[in-house]
Image (cartoon, rainbow, N blue to C red; front, side):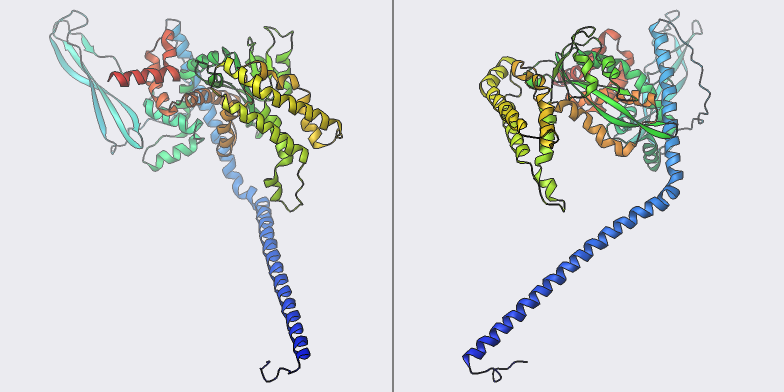
Length: 547
């Protein structure tokens, strides 16, 4: 230990000692920093090894311990689709029989159905008494005597409060002619069903909007003391799909009547012979709001087991308006001049093109990696130029067609021409293998489609309307894993059509479905359009104002 008395009196010696001490301190700080770095590196290595070990454990043991449960889940999903398909076919056959003016007898399918149990006694009962007749329907006599009553129980739900509604139909006997008079049986959304319209709407909304498979819903209801087996829920879904299909057809006709629509698709795993294949859900969206159109927005969905170009040909048969989409090759046949019914006008998506440049210029994502940050200056400049165009387009969103064209001619067209001139000059200096060159070629090869919006105020700058319609499906795939069958995928397309269209019109899908299911059987085909989301909302508002 150095003391004051041990220090040398000579100034030169003091300087030497001070320099030595400074050197020792610097060396100690360097060693401490090195130790800290080593510790951080060790912690990172431990975290990495833990991750590797966890992955190895899943590979070694996960398939064995989870295989049984996965197989059960697959079997439950297959059963769900089969049950729903059977119920859908029954209802469709009955509807066809009624439409023909007669009665069609549909034999019960040979599947084991659970014996109906009485509703739990702990549920409160609400009696709705249907007024009996005041006169005999046979002879007109008013001398009626009550014989008894028939009670039909319907399980209904008022947000998380379960109850059984007892609809009482009193029987009367005519003292004059001994004939029995009684009010007709109450209407159910599903023939011979016991689920109320609100309950059915909740099941459909949970499955197709909240992405909760029916087996999980059944487990949730069981925890609340309600026995609703998977087969019963599947019957309800299939029957509702058959009942609601006419509305989906009306929405499809409305979408394809638009002068400009958006189109896109997303992959959906499809269960096939013990494995999954990549199927597709397609959507076409009509949204006239960007150019001030008065018609309501809507979206229609289709399901296919592959991505063949024949599917959009089938979906858009007879359509010859404007299709705003990405550069998927399957759409190319739609743009051919010799196409039956007339060629569809192609409008490219600037958001897709921007994304290709943005990937090369995304500093934030590159900074997260360990590799040195390499940002393409050309791609960064392209993003800035495209963003300037988008900024001007935001200012005219919702304006009338002529006003949009005027602003575009004055402000947007010069930006687009400047971008094209710059891009062609830069492309001439790049190798064809350069990533930025590929992004440029994507646009330059389709430049007519990319610039068509400058001469048509109906066309948007991007295809984001279709991408937003598919966003919920992309998020839900992690929950429902795969479609159980081709029929299940087609049924999902019908329900997505209904739910997404309701959302586009700012209508609560569950409330709308509940009201529609309660009224659709009593609504004639000529007035079915009154139940479409935009008309339904208008009528509801008018009724509220009148009240």
